[in-house]
Image (tube, rainbow, N blue to C red; front, side, top):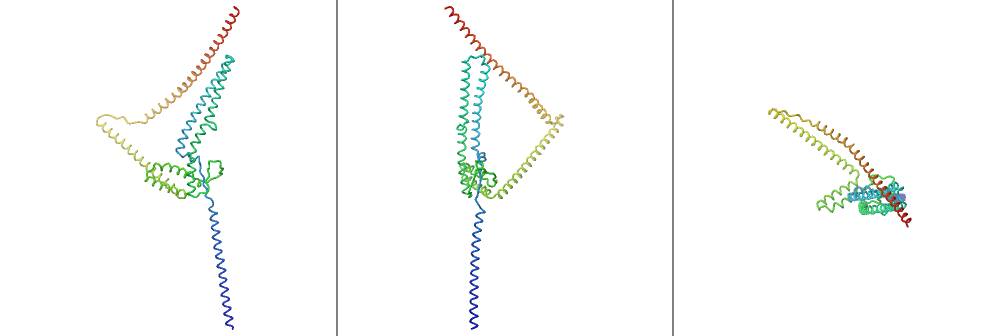
Length: 354
């Protein structure tokens, strides 16, 4: 009976231990699942949103088509400004002439001149509005110039965002206020490369296209890995420094060789001269250079007074011309006034005779 009790006790203990082990395993399993969920959440939060930005002004400055068209537009704008300035000078000239001649003119002539000046002033303002107003030619042509490139940039940004999983891409040059932006988030150079690739591909053969694609893949890899890009940049700098060193060394060798050849020719010439009994004057290019420098300096110094004299003479001639024009106008007005007086006197005498 004691043995039976002992066996039953042993079975109960074993069952209790198994149950306890099962509960411990379930707790461990639940703990592992909970850790996995927490780790996934933390990784998602740590990754966050992938953000980039572009600088539209910087991109436009590096697009050849835009810079060429912008230069042409600026030339047009300068021409329009000159035309406005010419109109303004003409108006000022007429205004000054009217002020000077006003005491000699009749009321009708004064009114006629003032009407002409007002008409020219209105014409100038209308021209300014047409060229430089809010809806003027300059704004219209500038918008027509920027719009196609902005569309290309928008398409390139979309392609980059889809390919590299960007969540947001901002424009730094827009009205959006960005107080700070790290350079590593700037994808402007990538956009410029995409625009240049599109233009290049239209002119490449199949072989060149493959080479270009390999180059593009390498550039994309550098964009994704800043450390690799820095290493590549350092290697490129070292290569350029090495090539410059080789070029400088080669140039120094060429210079030394040239001097040696000149010296050898001079020695041969001196030997030949000794044989013939003639003397060769030593070459001394330095004084000649000094003389040419002094001559150029003297010519410049002489040219300065001449330019001043020319300007002075031109101003004097212009002043004389204006005075002559004013004198001629005064004489014409005086003659007209005298003629009017004579006509009145003649009419008065004719009335008295009658």
